[in-house]
Image (cartoon, rainbow, N blue to C red; front, side, top):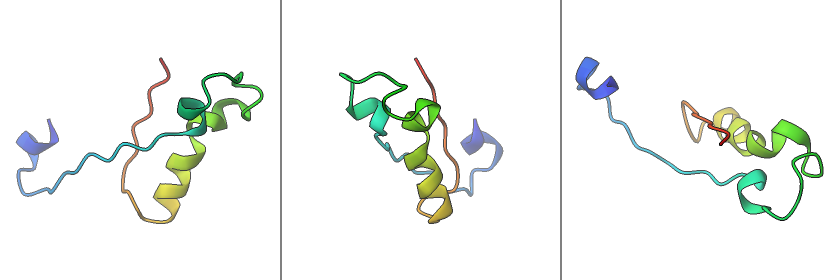
Length: 58
């Protein structure tokens, strides 16, 4: 959808695995709650490694 609206944008998809994705044998509470799925994304944004993050808890 963004490409249609702004074709000049350079869009790259980067998959970032979070502790919640990696440690499937542990409970979310043991991993720090919702931060288990967001900490790595927040760090990447703060470090300007990425501009936007999309998170989906399934």
